Image (cartoon, rainbow, N blue to C red; front, side):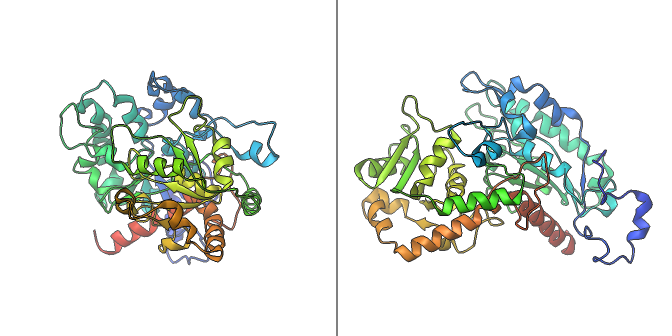
Length: 427
């Protein structure tokens, strides 16, 4: 591939010099990543022809969101402080593969030689490609690009060493979208992950499934700082917020699911004087406005995070970003998902309320949250604020010089460790 220039890039001429070299002499040993130079149809062409990704029902063209290396247009607001104006962008929640690819281009341990690579990145925009074919196309069309990609990869020498088990890709959609089980017209998504050789690759995705080689990473938020100081400044701002709402919920009802947890939560919120509801089904709502959401969550002590169309929500990371303690109603909404980014001990940063108890009337949201002591509330909020660097993606157009790893850094560390374990097991 034609990797960007870096002082850490290696060519074949340098391989011999690596032999016997200690890790202290080469900080990238064990961290080198090779990026496949894919045909443009698998990534860049989707951005160039971004109009094909926009549905008639979309409020905003997808062409708007591909700006600024995938983080979208910068948000300008004369009523807010500089910290809002310089670091906030209108970021689409399903565009992670573009953001990640652009961050990979600036990864300091890239190599032009796959022999020294510990992992191999496949910059296929799987989610955007699927988006193009989700409506009005049959099952074979939805997986056609993925099928061609696998055939292309299998012809490369890099595939042969571990049959693709050292390869990884990123999806801006949930894993379930790529596990279509039949060719029935009513079936959703594609069967990309069911392609035999595709199963060998690890996939980072905003929501994982039951497979071990699907790993959940945070949804992209709208906050993309370019310096570590900007992160610290934001964290300190969240520590000083006046939180006038005990708990809040931003979302819409699910009319097709009469007994949904979400509908029950809306009913509880409407009945409680302690709750602030932002109804995303209402006319003129501002649920798509990052500043409006941050204003709500930044004034809330707890933020309710029920499942929606799937188990996870971008709103979870918006609430953490605002220093608002998330309240979950299903373990699959966070606890079994973001293992590289969130603490294993979920009681440190969140509250869990049984959805079954809520629907049966045995549990009430307000009563449960009022039982949280002031000390526990302060401790959880501080833990949430400490998590902020771990769940954000820094501005990919510059290197974030910070002592804290961001979501991208943690994902790369996790991938390298996972592949090294597979290599050590002889897989």
